[in-house]
Length: 264
Ligand SMILES: [Zn+2]
Image (cartoon, rainbow, N blue to C red; front, side, top):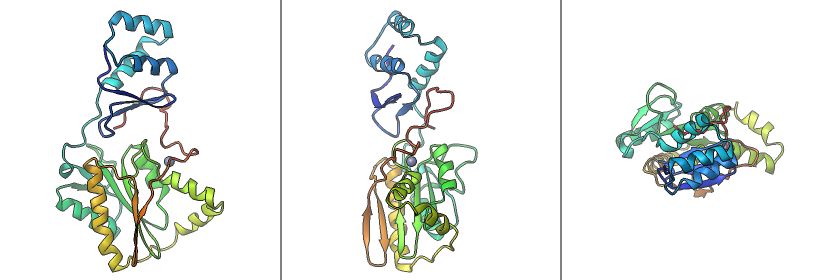
């Protein structure tokens, strides 16, 4: 027996099988003995060796079966080529719709939400005023759907960074960091979320839409940039990647059963 791919340690209780993020399986909720055993199985081992190791470490057979199945099953391929991938447009804001249309011209297939039957979307686009809607982004995180949050404010547009659940920080990480910097931020954010959506300057939209499309297309092609962009009428600036906030569970969610978890 041997694990099908490279086994990488991510953190306590968490291993990644495979080096390529788009093809890797993340196992969470592992005991130290289970993690050590999987790491040991990077080299071929006999059935007898395994049975002895399971008994020695008190790992039940059915638990091992479920771990081994998860470790041995590659995640479903979203698509070999970005041009055939499904993009979910989560609202009718002009930035969402026009960036989606640009991706459709490159061959992507558009759907109007990310939770219907069939394959999960490879990426979701959503535009909010002032602050990303935590209810919408929580659903995306729960379903392991990467998403490009677009935020419109009075001065311009912020694109991304692309949130890759379990890999990058998420919109809640961003909000927690803002709260660290300003304890009044939650009160401000609550008020901002109910303000009318400001109009997008024509020139800002002209710049933002193709950039949003290119960022999305690069993500689909597996090119990880990590950062985003801030676009105003006068500036185009890079936005740093979102670090995972220690108070956010987004990168370390453990299924209630404690079983291995295979991202969709
Ligand atoms: Zn987070």
